[in-house]
Length: 270
Image (cartoon, rainbow, N blue to C red; front, side, top):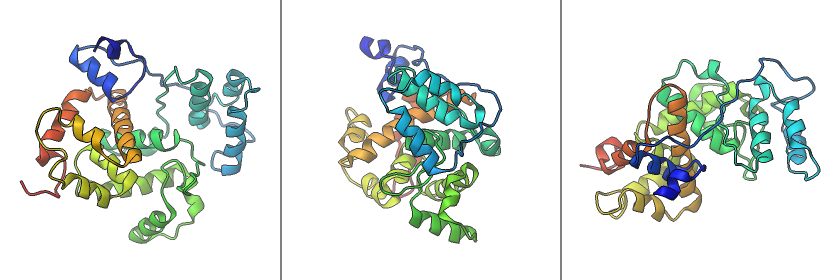
């Protein structure tokens, strides 16, 4: 427990450790930058992002100088990413971009969108994954088309590189997931691995039931490694962002609600 409380790493267990001793959470950085547009850099262009990323991971690059070039509100995601790399990830950045877009949403939904975006892309609008998930919210092309159909919109896949459209489509998907799942951890599992995976997980007789070492044992026994780690990271981000949005939130009581099935899903009969 002492080691957890001395850790500067921000993860589910360091937050739980702080909760057990009524301690403070590890320090995180939320930069406030000048509201100026940077010239010659298109935040929605994957080619521009690829070139910058190549610079970031070039051992000959002076990362502090590179960060200064992007020290503007319009490129806050790039700035925070560069600064994180420059510090070898010892400085933990939790930026709050696109507040004007998210402002109409409840704090809980804002925090979840922030939590997912930080994990998916570090808020970089022009991100493209190896599996061709698109944009800041990393939405797969087939899902983009499905959501566009439900919204009655004619959308181009490149539209996912626009933060407002990406957030709208991600929020649409979360609205769907929230019909069946009520806990941010399970929402994260479903966002990453699909609602079918999550439904199968929580209907198992040996997962997320009251018992010794639960719910931690279930969280660590998920065979899908990507979903397992993704869920823990998004839940950590969610707690941090809830606090940054002015809603005092602690990890321990949030995790404990996982032992009460009525609060996490509508798939099971109680």
